[in-house]
Image 1: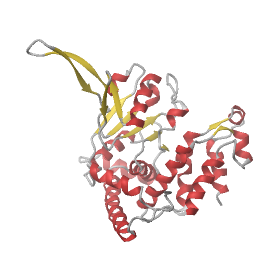
Image 2 (image 1 turned 90 degrees about the vertical axis):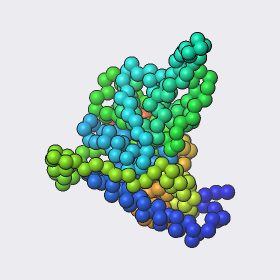
Image 3 (image 1 turned 30 degrees about the vertical axis):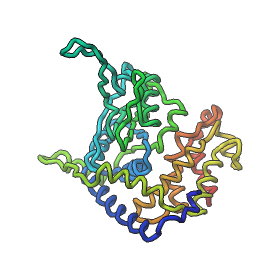
Image 4 (image 1 turned 30 degrees about the horizontal axis):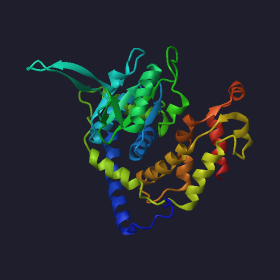
Length: 335
């Protein structure tokens, strides 16, 4: 049964559940806002990712509060957060865990699995592109499958499980850029920019005094799982569905009707991009206090969903064309 045609649920019950979740999410955003200043759009998109059950890639220069955002989210959402600083010598076992041989009091030896930092609910993978491809792959496989295999044994990760990875867009020397197939594992790619003057002023006053505001819990992990299930029950209108399909299919050079796409893109997004848009538009509508997504939600989320799922041709890069230019043309085609 399609998402659009789903009619088996009681509309009045669904409306009540959505309104109750909307009130709780308003408290979540208020709790985050006491600690994180001037990054409203970043916070919104990270919350959209978590509500959609996905992972997010944060791209920004150092010192913009990405680590603090993860710590704050862990407290506010009642999740167990961990942080791993990715370096070239980091091995898969440093993230996933490893087996050690132990000898008991009776002299018998046996292997015991020691869990790595990935066994948490909210993992910050700091500067993920500094680790080797082997280590990146180990993390990204766990992100996709929500489990790890060590010594032939399967170990299931906690639920919910989300990864917030960061990249520094400036310093690229000594890095291992994520392959396109692995980038596709991230629901959204979010650019973290500098705060405006008013936000930076408020941050200075709030963080350099004798006492600094601390985050408070406004949700639990179980409530987040329930919210993720509710998101999937929110109906999507035919117009929104058509807009998602038109946007994603129009971003593929082989099938696009836009000259800009055919001329400048080497390849475009796969079906996972449409799935991400379908979930993310629902989450954005709910965060905004609406019961159903609109085409405006599709347009607002087009760039963070598509940016890391498209590649420019060599000629386009040489001509100074940017991915954002192509996405703007795609958004304009929706009308």
